Length: 140
Image (cartoon, one colour):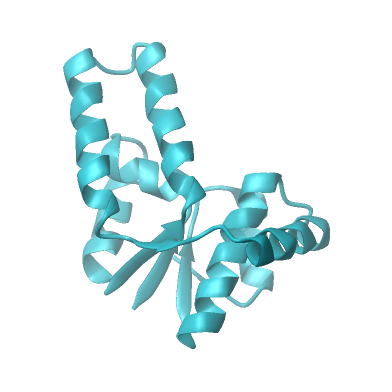
């Protein structure tokens, strides 16, 4: 089973939040965990913001970043290409998505097209969830 994780799902793997346990379970059950190349910068920004807001200590922050960097190589990363960006633009218009959300949806669509496999979609944004469902992804 291939699961596409947007950044809101990935962050839950490294920072204790509501539904973190469920996302960890999903990760262990899937054969391939995939995401967009942009998820790296988005996740690092989320970790840094929470650190600045005193959400965890310097030591905890360094461990989160270290674990994320180490794990990044284990994920299937969908590269951001010009073709994908144009598809994201179309998705932004069609589904009324924000920029990075449209890139995540386009990344999942690209993965589905290139792999020929069923792709499940994990995120915690209601608009992106609705768009993924309309684009025929199984939501997890």
